[in-house]
Amino acid sequence: MQLCKARLRTGEVEVGVVREGRAYFLRRGGTDGPNTLSDFLYAADPAELVRSRCADDTGVPLDRVQLLPPVDQQEVWAAGVTYKRSREARERESAGAARFYDLVYNAARPELFLKATPRRVVGPGAAVRIRRDSRWNVPEPELALVVSPQMKIVGYTIGNDMSSRDIEGENPLYLPQAKVYDGSCSLGPVVTLAATMPPPEHVTIRLTITRGGAVVFEGSTSLSAMKRSFEDLVSWLGRENSFPDGVILLTGTGIVPPDHFTLERGDDIAIDITNIGTLRNWVE
Ligand code: DO4
Ligand code: MG
Image (cartoon, rainbow, N blue to C red; front, side, top):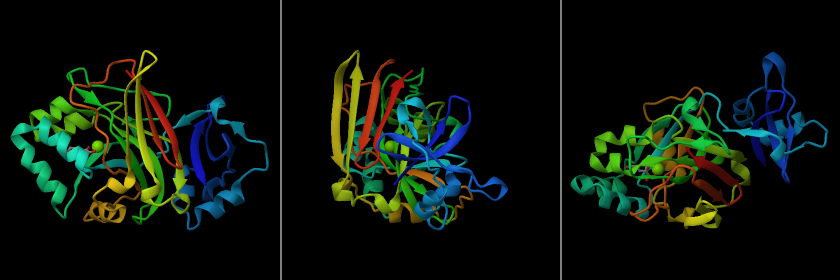
């Protein structure tokens, strides 16, 4: 089962269940809720609550609504160097600090960083940004975990951890500037409920970058190439850290374009993940 958050032509924001290219909006519950996407996702039985709130109508084609990023008040965090490909790329870009990437890849404690606040997140079809003070930028296609305030993984969505490789490579202490800026994160198009997600070995992540109608980069990886388990990442994230609104956790990238590649303004980025869909953005 997949849920979305959408803005209608009237300007109203609704939560919907997505089936065969249509969104079926869910009846709100007034002052007691459920009202927000989080209310549905964090319910004891999200699928049952969705079924009980689904209006008996014909729904709306998805291309007639503006899909919003599936985030309410949550912070977005990210894990890093969880795939060998990411470790290797970082070792090359950060000659002076290469050994730290090898250390973190093999350590028990993962790299975790605050990636975005909701205001910095864009949704499907919107523009992600590259920093004006950077020359080397890439998208990072990542599976995103939707985690409840009780630190339970309730769903999955697609995340793009936009990164400035020259800033990160110059000095690892610049990581927050390489990673966190306006329009640096994209999420969507839907949240697939945890119970309906296939096991990692059956999940493929694909990245396609198109420039002026021509594909300039294509890559894919299997989720099973990830070094750490989701549960391990979530348990480290929850150490000495509470998330009353829940949290979104990007799980790291296993796809890095070759070192000569950088994004340009106007590029189209499509990230496809099995059983979630395709998150498309353009670069501003
Ligand atoms: O250490 C830098 C960031 C790593 C990252 O974002 C990733 O591996 O996806
Ligand atoms: Mg990343």
